[in-house]
Length: 339
Ligand code: ADP
Image (tube, rainbow, N blue to C red):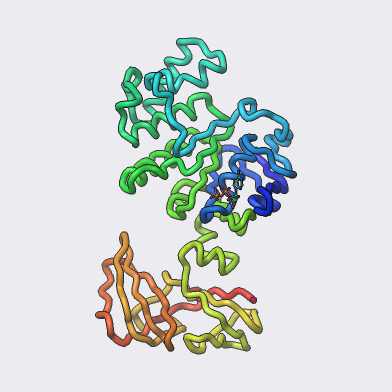
């Protein structure tokens, strides 16, 4: 098991890691998700031993690795721009770490065959890596990283350079491979969909600290702060005043049975609205805009001058732009944080 304990790292005035602690069980995948500059790469470098933390510990199975050099940690790294060795063919690239570790030629050959089958490129042994497509190169890089059976695989935006369709396909393959091999891994990304696809747990980073660490489902359903909610695309966050039974907001007075009192922030979940007359909370406004993205369509409802965004499956027929509209939400469509 991996443990990060109270890691701190600053670059001059910039606090890149602030009290970062977590554990990761064997065979599990942790995604580290956050905006650019939030400390993700610094965390990876500290775990790998590439950049020592100012303070704090990195432990494996309770053993302190802080003074262990990178190549003796038993970890593999895969970066977006971690190039294959151009003068070696595919087999020699994959066998590189095995050779370094002193495996026999027969062991190397067997492992290379196994890895190529795993990443979906059987028979590629003799190919020149310079003549592979971008997706094939990343599959070979993954095979090279997995070949030594590392106790931890560290991936830093490994699919970032690929186009969207290829990225989605490779991501699904990568998720399958990590589960099939029970590979313990940390996957760095700024893309929440990638994090949800690949990870058992997601650590959301903001300004050097972990803002929330949860399963993908819990993270999306129960963001613990307005910042996390906004980062996950759950907009519609309003200032409000909670009183007995109601919330006063700029979008009107909403029924509220919860415990908070006084100034609060309120999320009207974009994914919780319905067109039918079924929810307890109703919002009347004007439909000002619609947009289709992936399998979802968004509509913007202007209520008392406030623009709110709601999502519906693409198959739902929505009124035309300009129409007056009442949307309904169940009580679970509200989330309230005390100020
Ligand atoms: P992320 O990977 O989330 O984009 P980083 O870990 O790269 O974030 O950076 C976190 C913060 O630390 C940023 O403000 C970045 O500018 C700063 N930083 C990272 N590496 C260095 C460095 N070698 N020297 C100075 N500042 C750095």
